[in-house]
Image (cartoon, rainbow, N blue to C red; front, top):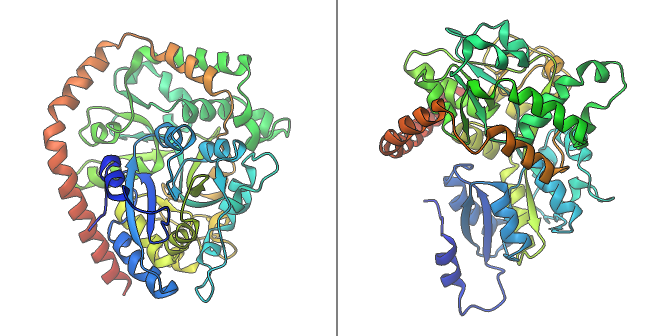
Length: 435
């Protein structure tokens, strides 16, 4: 059973205890972002590996800034947190992280299973004031930003370019992820596509550009179609797409795959595309915050999650893509009956230039060659720009969408639990298939 203790409950449990937290591990993660059964299993595994008992106190957050505020301002003693790329960068620059321990005694170092692409091409690009991000963080899940769309209404040709967002025939049927940095960086990479191709600009450092000129360029573009946006969504977009209430959603690949799977069960076809002029890749990673009391158990927890079999279970349950590579993952994710062969050698290494994996989860090498990282730059000015674009007054489309979402809330609560049951059933079925 999942051990989720809200802040007050966790605090009460620890009142009166000594400062020794060697038998308690406090984990702070995104909601619905782990196979819950692994939490109990880790406690057993940890005692087997170390001879020491451990109790996991597991809490969740919904946005990066909530997590960061509790650690940076509240000095919360979480032993583990799972921030996104640009927040890892901020925490590293602000000296809010402890190094991850890699000495596990007789226990194998499974952290080495993280794909070289994540270690060398992603985490190495994090700016840490001289610190190597790979010493302070380990990748957990990753993905891309693109367009989830309904091909019944939106053509495959149109989604090859971000210009699809400005096409008047889709007005009122467009949803945009309420994630200013993802949207800003994706569009900025696209606008600089030719300069990147000529070698005049570096794809992986575009995300540092928060100049007034670049912000104005993206803002002008967003303003050109904002009246056609039905909603700026944090989580309801994928649900609206499965109901055909929206035709297009600027979305993350993990959300897109969830929507594609759910829509398929009711006979609706959805697709996901990354515009050819470029977009962003993103990743979340485990870190040990500065005020942690149990960095040893925290490091073991990371190591435990990096075991291929546990990475596969997490992917099956939550629908996102693990940063773990290697032959076990490739074998588990291969499906020649469902997917055409693509080049995924950037992630799985040599010999993976023609593999049958889901291109939503593992885009081909040519596509990834045009995807760059987000960075912790210009936050205040970007937020101001985003606020100006969205405006203080919601459009009529937004009000309609809010009403629809509100009426669906009760059903969504019930649906959430049935969804988890279905995912677990699918996971067991996949296990049988792999056997």
